[in-house]
Amino acid sequence: MSEAAQNYEEGVEGAKSYEEPVMEAKSIWNAKTMDRVREFAQTYEDVKEGRDALNAKLAAGKTALIDEGFNKDALDAAMKYARTPETKRENFDLTYLYCRKALGVPVQDDLFSAAVQQHVRPISH
Image (cartoon, rainbow, N blue to C red; front, side):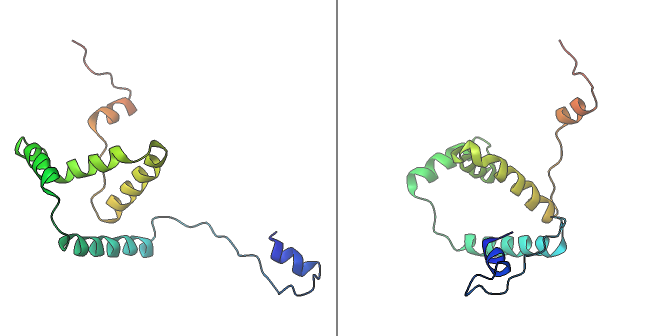
C-alpha cells in the first residue's frame, strides 16, 4: 500500500482520498502500441531526411567501406550498437525486435540457430 493510501486509511490530517491503481496484465503486441511505433518510425524518417550531411572525415571513411561492399545502414547500426554499454544491449535488442515486428519486417532466425534448436549437428570436415 502506498504512503498516500495508508495516510488516508489512518486518518492522517490533510490526507486526501486515494485509491490504489489497478494493474492489469496486457499483451505488449497490442494494436495501439504497434500504431505508436509506426507513427514514431514515420516521424523518425521525416526528421532524418532533413538532417545535414556528416562531417568530411567520417563521410570519407564510411564511403571507403561502402565502396568495398558494406551496407551503409548496417554499418551505422553496428557502430551505434558497438558504442552501447553492454548493460543496455538487451533492452536495445528487445526493442529492435519489437519494432521490426510492428513494422512488418520481423527478424528471421538464422539457419545455425534453427539447426541447434532442432538438435541437428553441423557437418564436420
